[in-house]
Image 1 (cartoon, rainbow over the protein chains, first blue to last red):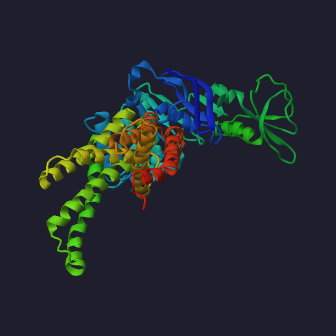
Image 2 (tube, rainbow over the protein chains, first blue to last red):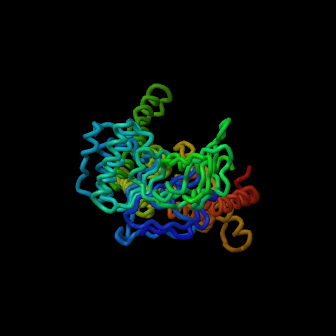
Length: 274
Length: 243
């Protein structure tokens, strides 16, 4: 179990988290979402150890040992690497630091990334694949993926997701993804955590969330239901409600199921409208 | 990691060695224009000494330059290596080269081991290293080191004078007292601020991690500047160096 307790963090005077708590059981695949700047990337960086909490603790599963960073695969939105190194040098450096004999560069060969090219000359997609290749070589127990999937082309995205799925199938890896675009990853996700002002606004298994968030098309706001956000049209409007109750006595309305992208958009739309 | 840092340190050395081009230039300058009768053996030691001093400052100031230039700070901190080991991996190759240059020069010059020079080189290196977090540009870093060194030099005289006036020391020429006091007032806080920043180094803009410098180094630096402005004139008068 990854456990975050009473986490406090700020960038200078701008406070991001004050007393944040979260538990993630081993092997769970979680989506972390929320409006831009809410602290998704910051939370991933805190867990990855590249930021340090001002107060509070992050307790890693015992199986990750005394140096958890050995078992954390972190792909940040910055795709940070030593850019002046060539791909081969970057891989060698990674091997040295992690004490690996060699890195299986199958993905790099598959995507035709030349070993002699400098990292700074690679496209975003190629850098993502290089990162993934490095991370897979660690046999990670905790995978932290910041919003990178949507910025790479369709073929590399498919490669990335196939490798991710293979890893999840092979071992019980815990995954925490920060994302705003979910079409490709919806099938993988087990739990959705929506952040708001440094706290958890929604924390539900995806199936429960899909049952609880609905779009109601009606001429007037549905009585007795909490409206997250709405889209007005001349004759009828769309109301996104949470929690939707199956036994709600609604008449002359259309209740529409939503996919994850629409669900998150409904929550986020509500925040922007507030 | 050490291997990469050795490579980085050697690259800094190669950049400093460009200064050696001054040897033939100085020779040509003498032959063509000033006619002082310089020989290669006169020019080489001076240029080599300048190169060693430049390396001491430049390698210190550029301690984190590859992480800044390559935007690799986040990657470096995600590696399973403690902050202190990261700094050690950076400092050890640079210091080894610096000591090697000093030793090589001492052997070639054949005038024995000049320990004062070594202490001075280490002193410059650590001042420069303490500025490496705050400063991105090598040129500004070099200026910063010389500013700090200037403040150190002036404050050591001023503090000696103040202590002599207060009757704490018997001689106004007590160099060791001045150096120690200036070291405590200037270098101590800078070193402490540097260590605090390193211990808590994070993947966020370095300007947000400078608080120890503002809290420790800046106040003591301002005190030193105040003391220099107030007492340095009196020191010069007392030692007969005015007029």
